[in-house]
Length: 89
Image 1 (cartoon, rainbow, N blue to C red):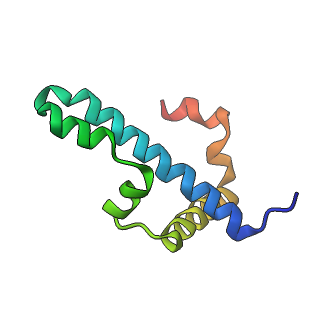
Image 2: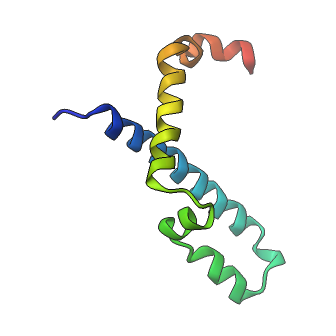
Image 3: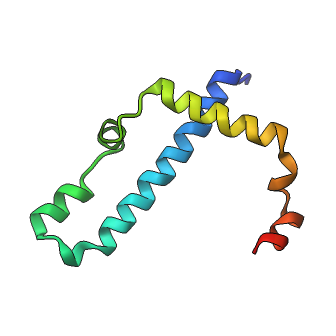
């Protein structure tokens, strides 16, 4: 199976945005005490596509994000090695 550069950037961008989406849902669940039950239901039922439209992210933006992150990884791959994590944490 061959994956092109644009497809790889799209996959990376989608994974990052989906992670942000899931963190957003978890934060909203933790703040449910401050919301009425109707507002909480509306927040939790937010789909991923609705989240993308809410933050005004298009497919092109996802590819650009993935390209940016892949470019960082390709040029500075050493920062992703576990041996360097101990210095930061």
